[in-house]
Image (cartoon, rainbow, N blue to C red):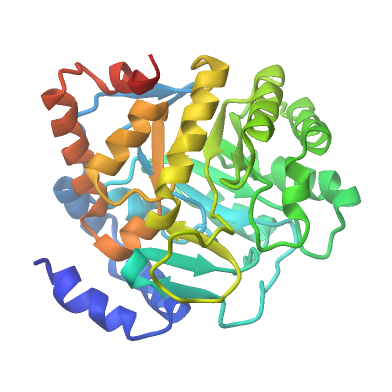
Length: 354
């Protein structure tokens, strides 16, 4: 058993989920602050056996990224890269800073290997975080996830997103539009075809630097809704779809809990893979998919790749598995690909759908 599983995780799990998260961020921020230490950790945790993965004009060291929500304010990007993540998505950022929802607002479900959060886009605001990121020399691909301020009605959402988008373009390698968090009232209404089309078209029309633009969707959509979003993504030449965000479903949970919010981790794994399959099948593999939801092991990652994901993200798995998580998933995925006779990752993408 690793030190993380035997000592660190039990100690952190004795604290509230949000307090443990704050300690984790600060431990990375200050414990891995020096470039020398980062380089030493990178030698231990990086996996460079994938070659260069070319996705929407960017080059990734490996397919596994840290999902948005962990490093909301862009504080530990290079520290996460040194732990073996091929890319880091910061945010969700809103144009104006906001405190998020009332605490407590994060809850662990250890029996289910899950996490419920209703954080509500707590962040320092896009202008502040972008200024921080301008001082950074990122050691991996940097994504920026943008959302809508809680006090901005949906009728004014486009202007609110656009302000964040224009700033994010100054630092981001790619930008993700988050219209799928269940923790901002009425936000998911923006996933409806007409609203989403208008929002994404406006951002693309103002995308003067041609920054890759992706949209992150919920797992709680119907097949027809997923297909409608895929049509929009193809029509507007989006660079990809991130599938999926957290779920509001509580189906199949062992833990008896009545807390509201988005559920992540193992309980969303099956559904997120189904959404990936739907997008890949419907688009005939024409749009890149970042698969996220319930990845804890290399086998979980491989399942999403075979369903159609050409990149992957995780967050909850890192919380449960610890510092070696990215290395273990990446190195395990390389081994599985070899065992299954795939010469590279691209050959495996969507292989279950062919």
